[in-house]
Image (cartoon, rainbow, N blue to C red; front, side):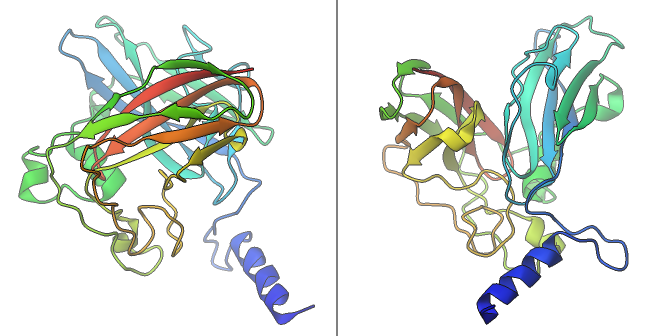
Length: 293
């Protein structure tokens, strides 16, 4: 076997076995997805947003789990806007479910079955789970400890669709989408830090306004974007086109603050394409429903 192939085999083996000390290393594929409850926000009208995310334990593998017995939220479900296309690694603060002001001590339960294993996330309104603006800045971008973050001066970006929110297209037919975004220009753009993998510095992502399109629902392996979009999830490998990759820099802002993209679908079905604007800590998004025939 050529030396290059031997090195690749050794690397794959290293990525898929635990160390002698019991530390679990990451796997490229074959692992499960765990739903996660992030906490709750209170709305001005007294209602609450219960915020969920997930942890795909794979480094590369995406999973498609349609809404149904293997991907349900109850009571009131099974469909409450949860993703069906699960990107690798930890995807925080991914979607919200609004509950009434009198929700009280009830709970929402997200049940997700992947790789034959079922896991649940339990959403409640206990006081310890309240979310303020500093929490996602710390959890997503590992910033917000400075005076501006502590004083909540950073405001989230705002993203607006410039094209319709619903489309019907044929297989292989290019679909033009567009969105605009604005921000308070805080924090100023800064590249992802150079650091040893696994160190606290390496868990920080690049900051500054950036926008990307990705698949939220439907089999994302059937969707191609032009231009290619950067990853919206943590991938710490050098050159991985992820804002968490060492040295990754936030692209310059377009003069018109618009981010057009063309999406092409290779299989029929129902899809939701999401556009996300983030400053590296706080997030806004908008969804486009696409029926492909």
